[in-house]
Amino acid sequence: MLKVLVRDSEGIKFNGLAQYISSVNSVGSFDILAGHSNFISLIRKKIEITEPGGKRTEFNLESGVIQVLKDKINVYIGT
Image (cartoon, rainbow, N blue to C red):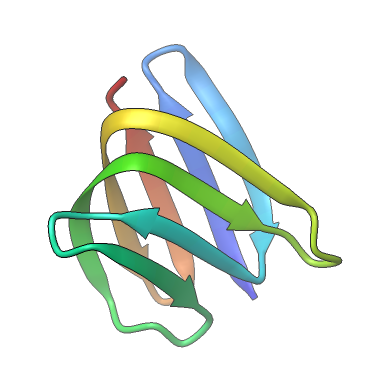
């Protein structure tokens, strides 16, 4: 399970658990599941969070940053 925090300049947009996360970077679409290697990336277009039970939450964005560190995901949405 992933612990996810999504925020922008106005505050926290999502704080909870996820089964996986999908987004887009300069290489293309990617998914993050539990046990993913640590990394940081610029993201664009969207981030989709799939929670336990299958509920999906999507944020559209022009740019942002995602950080993965030991199943903790921090997302900073620029716009």
